Image (cartoon, rainbow, N blue to C red; front, side, top):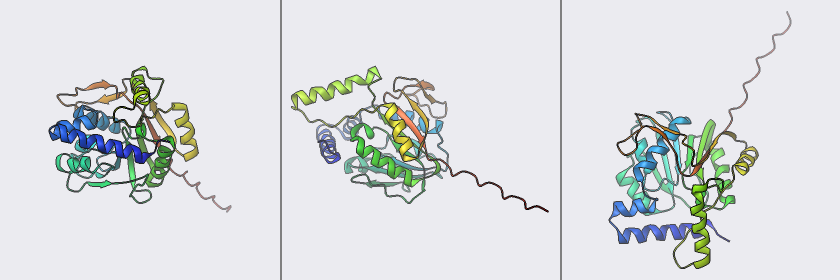
Length: 257
């Protein structure tokens, strides 16, 4: 049975192999799938669409080398916790992307070092794509705990319904056949199953979007020379869930005169 520990081992080994073979910036870009700035801009823009505020409290699970971290340093009042399993990527993030007041931590298992109700946004970009469903579910349990009422979680995922994502599954099958090269787990989810998870965990589904749907609005404010303003696709599908606010208390009844 695949485990998160096996994934951590293989992913960390892949990062170290790239660092040994290429200049640091190129090695890190390869480790996180390339297009460092492109995906950072898309992730930033997506969060703005779904509630990012200048004073948000963000937990970025799988922050890696800092694609999203770098996009958030321009918010002076924003509080940020970045979590990852690979120390080399966290070190790069600290040196190249993060602010001094940003908190970056190496974690193991499904832990989330934050108080109950602290976060207003939690992100998992390219994280659940590499975990067993049970591990992703356990992370969402932790996410519900750390989110403030009205807070949201945004995560990306692979789904069979998106034709462009089949190449990832075909790569999985090739690895199973050959096992002649270093591989790591790639997991697919179904949108209908996510809705079931949300109900059982107590979340409200805000949005589920296919990875081939142009649904991310890059504005002139978030655009860069490499990523122009306009509608973009993320590639992976994504989901936005919200921790409901408690119902408003009914006004006290006026006693009869």
